[in-house]
Length: 506
Image 1 (cartoon, rainbow, N blue to C red):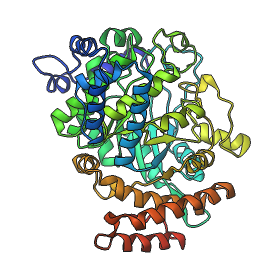
Image 2 (cartoon, rainbow, N blue to C red):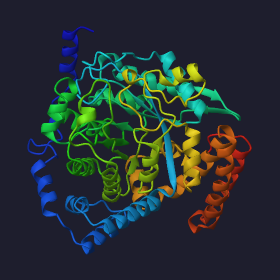
Image 3 (cartoon, helix red, strand yellow):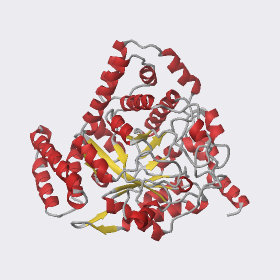
Image 4 (tube, rainbow, N blue to C red):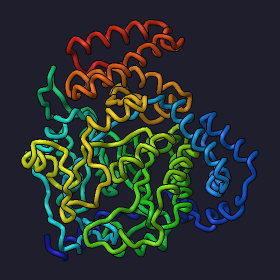
């Protein structure tokens, strides 16, 4: 597409009235002066105050900006150990010991933006540009399903060729794919989308196509830094991006996900920005984000900033900021991705993460290419000029599941809540009351049993079966599950799965 026509396309995408409707007296919800004031006024918090704040988190109540700023300013190592412990307790209380898995599918790397930290940026002449056909989307999906995945997040560059119509068609094609397994077949049961901000009318097309969660990362909430790292393109408009998820909610998409790219600016400010984003969504719609993500800046093709940013976050700080997010918004899921090294993922999962990915390929057509080369998804060679950034953990799904099982954590491929209508305000209410996790525990066991029967290696199956025995014994001992016919129905469903039936859920 010609430069002039792309420029015209950018001009017609942004609808100013769909920004203005959410502003308060012409201002957005990121008040930088107020954020800095909270951080300044909450320096050197005493232990009693921090412990009181932890009790609020453990009561599954969202923290306010002052309380979150106080956690950010903790310096005492012993107090941090208490915070790490509290983070895990909060996670277990709301989500039990489950870790939900997904796989990302990158459909295009055509882009009109010039984000200085990203390999996809339009002026990166080294990037190998490609957009998948619908046949290729299905091929990539088959490769992902062959690993055992049931949930996918589809990622698109911001470009007129990967518009809402293309996205909707990709979603429909992913749902069509069914792949034979040891028993029955495998399929993607939930398609989430990470894509550019759109208008309400465009977002309605994704809703009608069966989108799950709509994910947009603000990258940085600091306005001056945002302008520096997004010099031109659609993404240069801070407020169009800031209110992307407000528009999604108005379009009927009641599951949305926020995130920041840590390493672009001061991590303390970004944590506060994520909290303010959560608060504003709750103010407008009564519910906040379904998940929060916190990727760190990693090397990207031709990007000097990706390796030289003065705001890069070290491992110890990363663990702390994830803990603060867990405590600040205790009922929201936290996603740690394969950007991070395996050893760090293990450590950070322990402070309250709920979702992660594995067998990840982020090059366009990467899953199919890996199968062609090695007939395996464990190819650790990454082509920097064919993907958005470099991954830290390229292990196969089976390896990560086995590791988590050894840690006493059960893998979940559950998508039941979404298909039973437990979304939006319904799931938020269930999460805050610590009820949803109980239903999810049952469905986690059912989907884990599916995985062990259909995809697991002998080593993973042996370890997984031992974990299932423990989970079953726990379920049978908990009074909640003995209400009505819940336990009886679960036992029946479990036997049906063991006998080869698939996709049964509570």
